[in-house]
Amino acid sequence: MKKLLFAAYNLDLGGIETSLITLTNFLLEKGYEITIALEKREGVFLDKISPNINIIEYTPANDKNIIKRKINNLIKRYKFIKKYKNKYDFSASFATYSIPASFIARTCSKNNAIWGHADYLSLYNNDKKKMRDFFNKRKVNKFKKIIFVSEEGKDSFIKVFPKLQNKVITCNNLINDKRILNKAEENINDLSKENVVTFLNVGRHDEKQKKLTRIIYSAEQLKKDHKKFRVIFIGDGPDTNFYKEQVKEKKLENEVIFLGRKKNPYPYYKLCDCVVLSSDYEGYPVVYLESFILNKPIITTNVSDYEQVEGHGIVVEKDETEIYKAMRTFIENGYEISKKFDAKEYNTSIFNQLEEIID
Image (cartoon, rainbow, N blue to C red):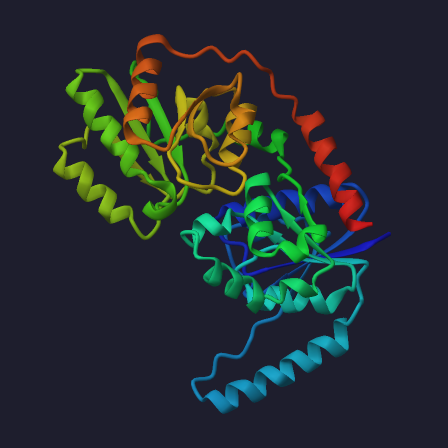
């Protein structure tokens, strides 16, 4: 039985963490021995981990005294290396932003990889130096493989690190379709089904990336058109209050509803008529797969892997007017999904890629 380790920051609510849970549980079922290494053993997803998955913790010292902190961290690193050096057949830094996760993955196996979950060139506003600094701090050149969840992320990385292109692989995220379908059946008490077109957005409230002002603008225009609809926002983030102020200023409180973070967002997919994604950039949008599985049309900007939406929804330019037009068209005409999503076929394809990466 091969021993695999995946390193992350914690298991709190988030796209990377959701993908990690799905990935590790899936690989466990396939007969691998799984360990997850965390900077902090915390998060709402801790209880989603199978009891057969081992969890270890590596938390860097945070002493205020710099000298003391450096000494303590050297001791911690030495002890970790002594205990775990090359103890695994494969190891991966799954939470790219975590520098300790990079150290853990490079220590635990010579057969290692680092995961990238975004188009980092877009994330850094095409500033190649900032992107280069980010990955150099994580010693990206020391990894045997560099995995991106989208072609867009892979392509932008190669632009900045052309010498590493032979190490770079695209591998989309797995999806747990059975869990999603089961969770979608749970009852919810904070929202009821109404005879009005309901749009849903699920994600982090971060204007730089998610551009939720485009949806709020669209809601304002639709209200001026005397259309009957509502928009549900699930999630939170640094710009939640900004969005709420915009909704209040535009007098959209009856049309736009903020429900905050939800451990289980899937009943809201079931309740809605259409999912809306307004981002400027994404890694691989998990909301695509969730919408496909729950048979909900999606309106999306042309972010990474938008080609997969064909037959499942409407793709528009990254522009508020285009989103408004698509939402209006949906209210007036609806959208009939013409392409069936086969989750089993999709996961089999991804698992075949994973086997190549691991072996």
